[in-house]
Image 1 (cartoon, each protein chain N blue to C red):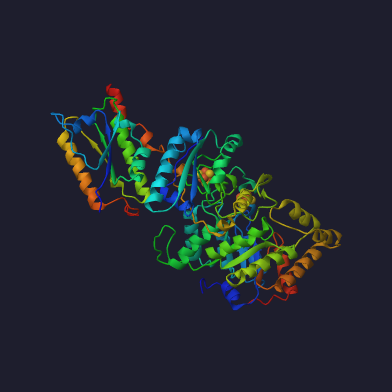
Image 2 (cartoon, rainbow over the protein chains, first blue to last red; image 1 turned 135 degrees about the vertical axis):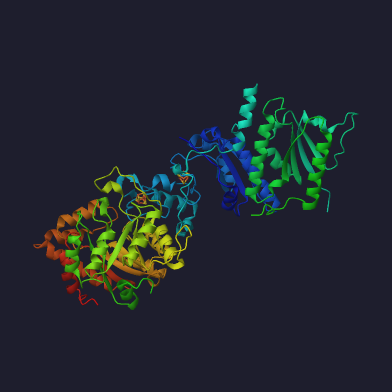
Amino acid sequence: MIIAERKDLKQITEMLEGRKRVLVAGCRSCVSICHAGGEKEVAIMAEALRLKAEREGREMEVSEVAVERQCEKEWVRGIERQVAAGDIVLSMACVEKCGGCGDCVLHLTGGVCPIARCAKSLLNGPCGGSQDGRCEVDRETPCGWEQIYQSLGRLGRLDLLEVNIPPRSWLPSRSGGPRRTVRPSVAKGAEERAAEVRR
Amino acid sequence: MSEPTIAMFICRNARAALTSADGTEMPLAGVQVIELPCSGRVDEVMVLRALRQGAWAAIVVACLDGNCRNLTGNYQARKRVDEVRSLLLQLGLGPDRVKMFSVASNQRAVLAEAVRKVMDEARERGPIRILEGDR
Amino acid sequence: MRSGSNLERVLESGRFAVTAEIGPPRSASSEAVRRKARLLKGSADAFNLTDNQTAIVRLSSMASSVACLQEGVEPVMQMTCRDRNRIAMQADLLGACSLGIRNVLCISGDHQTFGNQKEAKNVWDIDPIQQLMVFRQMRDLGQTWGGDGLEERPQVLLGAAANPFADPFELRVVRLAKKVNAGADFIQTQAIFDLDRFERFMGMVRERGLDRRTHIIAGVIPLRSANAARYMKAKVAGMRVPDEIVDRMSRATDPKKEGARICVETIDRLRAMEGVHGVHIMAIGWEEIVPEIVRECGLDHRP
Ligand code: SF4
Ligand code: SF4
């Protein structure tokens, strides 16, 4: 099951604070079908970011790309040059190991999902059971927080581990009921349905 | 302050409203008219781009409810306009910089009045600034 | 005083604190807790009542804490994030305080697969750091996390756990700092056998000045047999037992005595470390050894 939803633009622009060359990367597979991260959505996002940057008089170069499948290395390799040219990639694709929590924190955890990969879904891990890179639950399972630590280390963002992440909202997760379509503008509305019936 | 410019996305059928029975065109100083085969062709990117390229406001003009030759184009346009407004709000820009009007091809006066209002409002508020969206 | 608890008084006075663990029984009677409380009275400043430790159902830590209070000893109620969401946690904190409990230890809890009801659904709505944030807001601002004012604030000393022996090592002190920032008044550590590593950990703690912002109570476990040592070394995640300890235990003619001796030696070394403000003795199922160890260390005569 793939569910994708774009974050509030305010949150996204905060995440991009200070970046000058942004590559908005979409994916033509799952997130494209659910209208959250395909070419069209990439274009909208890029245009929105440019508009904001220009209005604020900030310099920001926004480029767009859509990969056939971001979850496969072969496809991603095709955009290596573009990725290297930017100073941040805003990926609108989904994550393979995602717990569907509805309020993504991957920007704080080096792209590794703590909800799905930590046995306790800790937001301020690792717990005291993490040893030799393995989870306390079972020595075969990698500790999600060890992976987050490694990933943030590679990104030079270990500072993120010093910050307490406050209690999160589980409202958009499963207890929030069925999900609505992401871009309301692509869902068929009542009037459209009625118009079609009339015909 | 310089005169405002606004972008008008208008469907081919509604466009007739810009011309009077005697064939004279409505005076449209400062209005950049972008004709579309159907208002359903408008999308978020187009509107955002128009604003980025300097329009002080953007309007989408479509046919009256139930009158779309392609059945649902105007309804689709309305949803996209709603979406753009929501995006603007999230960006900290004024959502009411984008408006939608429905007119019949003979409602010239109605359209002229709408355009005048948008122009006046734009003149009053000036070019789009950040944080005018009040957040 | 945040809580008015005995533990807080001892820690604030700068005296070396002693806490000990009491495991609640699998029973609807609190008699076993009472018996241990009577046995251990005077040997420690406060006693931790575990909360369904290793995910095995037992008498609740709140009921066990109340039994301790009735026996005249001070409890530290442990509360895991495994079994409650934030609503239940806040209600339990209020309930505990209304019953006279003044110390609460915020912990994540062992994963349910350690227990014998592996199929249970866990909660982890919030993690221990967030639990501290929530509880501190209740105590210091008199507000639930949702923002409702409390007629009466919970007077409570907030504790948290730290494990210097888990990985990645560099992160252990970072996580401790996060807990201190979130409001941990005291910290009880995982059992220490590897003193060298603990020493290095304390060095990092002092470097960050954390020992001055919280009270670090170092954990110890008296070993009963060489097998217990081997088991902990091999099977318990986040535990480090050096070979020399295992060797000493297997060579001993009286392993119990040797285990107690190792424990006393460990405590002596811990007391000498700058920034360590107390010890926490976890004599699981062997509580009767605690008074002896405390006496041997010259830490008896608790006020
Ligand atoms: S934090 Fe994890 S579970 Fe939540 S949306 Fe992101 S990847 Fe999915
Ligand atoms: S060991 Fe790692 S993955 Fe397992 S529960 Fe602890 S922090 Fe989560």
